[in-house]
Length: 560
Image (tube, rainbow, N blue to C red; front, side):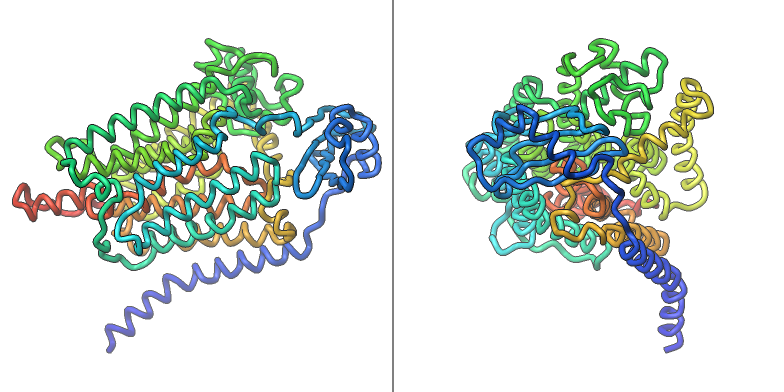
């Protein structure tokens, strides 16, 4: 009885500070939500709408239409955006600056797709990719939790189709249930009690009863090769690259000429300097070959980077499952190939890669981070680099540090410093002591901008967004405390991949801007943690199975 009371007392001493922290964050979020005030429009709505209606693109989009409505949102301290709706569809968008001058206008009725290659949006191709995704991830019998995970992932395709036709609010609301389910599922997978996997057979195996594992592997390799070719052909031939790739390439071009991109972007690339310095440094080698100085320059090289990043992420998912040892059973290689194919077959990924966005590169970094999870220093370095590339992965760095002790913790911290100090040095060398300040000032735009692509705005509760931000921080605090208290949890790489995915989804939902492009951060982690075979995934499971078969002894668990 005394030992039970002592354990309860120890548990309370650990969780009491965390509970107080989470409660304080939630109360702070409520307070900020209640006192939050919208920044005033730089151009009054009446003036902005009147200027927009004089633009030829807006007039063409509204020709013959009745009942159109407008909405004016603040872009920054100088510009408004006027959006024209017919029903729930945005048919025209006009940017108006101080003085009532139109800066840019888009007639969405003449645009085939918002961005990316139109081929990637084709219904037939989406259906084929959805079928392939199900074939690689679903299991039999059908009444398995794994199939709910598959359905949740595929539900996100609905939002992509709605976004293609610029039903913006509807697309965000359609994505919300799937994201909320995956958030809950990943957190429970990571921090919930361990459970024995329920017996199930991969759907691909069920549908190919006449093939032995060696022949199934050949088929899977062939599918992987074909899908890789599709990515190259569709991705590189894209006719509608996203403005993000222009910003990354133009900033990289400035960088190789010895100029920081912050405050020095070419005209027409609006707010292209709102990314951390590694975004531009990573594209600098590409910019040496294909510099970008305006929106008229080609970004085919940047599109190729996105395609290569998708293929590298597939390789990282495969390697995370099969390991590097020779003599592995064919079932393990088959599971790795199916997980890699699931990542590439996820329908929004092909669209995302065809935009050239940097989000695919971030997904590859995170997949490599999972691959290196058992090497704390290397993993911490990759997560730090990902944070310097896009800010969100900095929320994952404490997860890798929390279970470490002594020399391993010191090595991980040294690795973080080893990748951070040169980047800070680059800022100082090119921009002086104001270089880091200029970067922080430019990046801070992302935290203060208004956007229609916000789940909070779509729900009509945007003033409560700080409450979501507090919840995301609270989840990080709970996860870090749990890993510090129970470092043995970090030995399970599957759990940690799920936890990383859950925290990234929480960060995305809490943000003031969300796009389906951000799914590229999460899906490789989900493919490894939720959609791969639990009986064969990971080195430990394979070694245990091998030991049972008398092949080798089971080694002691790896220290976190």
